[in-house]
Image (cartoon, rainbow, N blue to C red; front, top):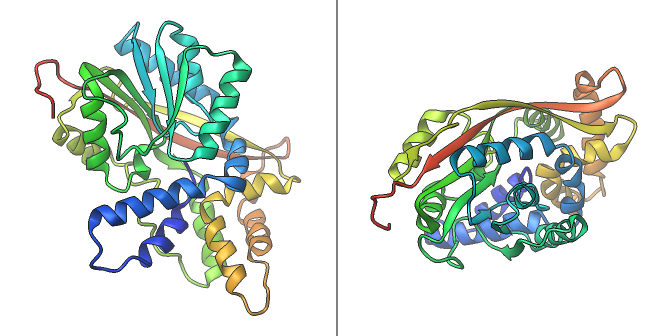
Amino acid sequence: VLCGLVHFARSASRIPRAAPLRHLQSKLSRNFSQSFDGEAATLFQSFFQNGAPAWAETVSAVRRVNASPSTIIDIASGPGEPACSLSEAFPTSSVICSDSSPDMVEMARTRSEQLGRSNMTFSVDNMNDLSTYGDGTKDIVTAQFGLMFSPDLSIALSEIHRVLKPEGHLVATVWQEFDLFPLIKETMTEILGKPPPAPPINPMSLADPDPLDAALAAAGFEIAEGHREVKDITFNMGPSTDEKAYKACLIPVLPKLKEMQEESEENEDFIAKALGILKIVAAKQISKQGDLQLSGVYRYVVVKKPGNQARR
């Protein structure tokens, strides 16, 4: 869930000011899922393959709040994690792997088949519309690096609260720091000749825990064990001699770069230009072994739906 930010900005700018908010949210969500399809979905594997430590941490976080959940839904699951890890850790649980991108869901299905998981089902869903699922039907909802991409966090949290059973838990992760985003900003500043506009949906928007905790409380959640726990993670993107390592880093801005190429009267290759700039600005991220490495810090969101609370 690292891509589509500039695509969001471009799509939002095309919606008339008088358009209803729900229309805007629907269009943003649709374009966001499309930005994870095709080439971007393939490139995302470079990030995905580095996520195993975070998947294991999420399994542990879930186990702390519920040792034997019967139903788990992993939203914004991408190519199937932590859903597949959860299905292995809780073999008697029913695990739903959900993402807004059909391509991602198909990748997840393939991954599940390769791993021999028999307790998983798959669904294309937007976290702001979980109407596929009834009220109070899930023990656990997980969202690894996904909440910050909701067009309206209050709606997403309300939907998660609705589908959880009383005493059910949301276990999520959000970015607190990540090397990637300053590198992208520096690259696009060089391309555009000025700092790029702030994206309408910002991957670092939940870095401050206080506003998020306020939103969680407003949605009816209570703090649970493990909330605000902080973890480090390193993404090894591969050899610095491999262009794919850098192109994967450009996922958030690939739609914008492609648009600029299409509109260029000189047929300028903006993707190649961005890759060249990124290789320079990311020089400090090269390890002694010659790999491109990105470090990050993420924070856990672990909250509970009260048992005595009426359905919302």
